[in-house]
Image (cartoon, rainbow, N blue to C red; front, top):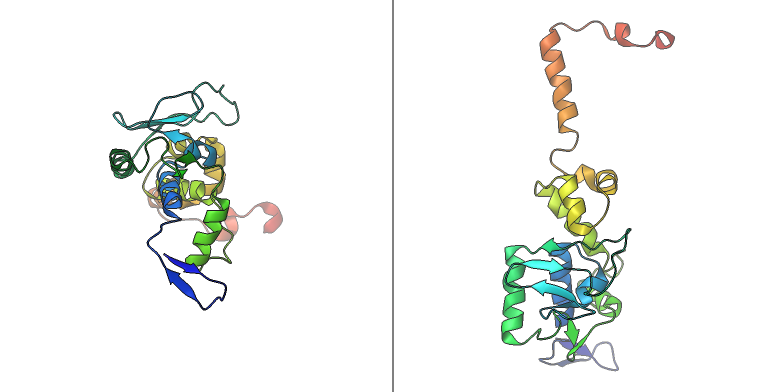
Length: 205
């Protein structure tokens, strides 16, 4: 990590990793599509007020223990992909995340907005309209591109299937595929097609 001094052209080399907690936040967000609050309170320890990560069974109970369910934001449990689960188990085993998976100086973070902006600047993406919430959009997009149905993607991130279909449906490789094949199949069955004029409504002829 290179820290900036008083002069923009000066730099101080250091082995500190002030954005390491952000890297963990981003990985969890990308692989589960969870909201920032659930990621911030995610813990390997099942305690009230925390979102619990069951490392044995690979499940992320995103609603904090003891909190009532919200009809608009149900925060249903989510299965954890094997690749992410391996990271979570390693972080816990090494003591990197003993109480919370995303912590700063041993305490759970309240917000990653400042760190996220710093990361965007370092990556040369400061001008892009990105935020921590963008991770949810990416998770849905990747799920659909990977072959998940709109129902499955909606359940993963905790939104309505209708919204996933309207906003992200075009990312699916099967988007409108049935309609396109129906046109092809219909033409094949009917053989010779009537003139285009015959297919138009009377007012257009």
